[in-house]
Every structure is written in C-alpha cells, then in structure tokens.
Image (tube, rainbow, N blue to C red; front, side, top):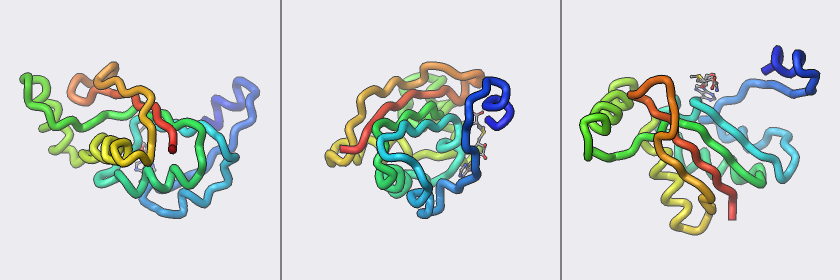
Length: 134
Ligand SMILES: C[S@@+](CC[C@H](N)C(=O)[O-])C[C@H]1O[C@@H](n2cnc3c(N)ncnc32)[C@H](O)[C@@H]1O
C-alpha cells in the first residue's frame, strides 16, 4: 500500500493492526469512513461478532469485505471440498454466521451479499459483503 500510494501520489496512512485486539476500535479513523478488508478476516479463526462490534465502534458509513466465506453447504461436490479445505487450513468458519446474526438482531444492515463471486483458488472462493451499522 505504501508503494502504491507513492506511485499514484495519493497520501495514505498505513499501519499494522490485529483484528483480535479490541483496541482496533481505538484507531483514529474519521467518522463515516468506508472500511474495506480483503482476504484477511477469513484467515483469522474465530473472528466474528466481537470483531464486527469493534468495527461498529469506529462509526463507519459502510463496511466492505471481499473474503472467503465458510458456508455450511453440502449440496455439491465443490461445496464439500470448499468446506473441507477451509477446515483443514484452520481458516475462519464463523464470520458469515456472525454477520447474519447481527443482521437479524438489527445491529447491522447487510446491503449486498454475493457468495463465491471470484477467486484464483477454486477451493477458496471469495464473497462480497457490504454492510453498515444501524
Ligand atoms: C492472504 S493475505 C491478504 C493480504 C491483502 N489483504 C491482499 O488481499 O492481498 C492475508 C493477510 O491477513 C493478515 N492477517 C492475518 N491475521 C491477522 C490478524 N489477526 N489481524 C490483522 N490482519 C491479519 C496478514 O497480515 C495478511 O496480510
């Protein structure tokens, strides 16, 4: 991101953070920001409701995830292979469930959710989620 921002002449602040750390909600982010993650939430086992609630504390306008979702579907052979692959690699299995739960509780509003829309690895297809806090 640093290299990219220099090349296009767009100033970006880049820093490390740990999604598991509650202090993620203390970062200095302007209210009404758009938060975007890609293929990183899905790497962290167990990340779910608390992480989403920590993001909500940042008062974003919109949150966009391009992440590999674990869907408990066993309708096709590829479904079975994908779920097995995610489990064998110890990836996240509860992020999709957590978003759905918070949506049902009215905590967030999921504007768009498109499952398995892209991805280089067929065993780890990427889904798009766009949501905002209520
Ligand atoms: C497959 S890479 C994706 C990198 C980049 N987002 C992309 O799309 O090219 C997974 C990323 O997840 C990040 N990651 C893994 N565990 C994390 C955690 N607990 N908190 C924050 N980021 C984490 C890693 O640092 C790594 O950059």
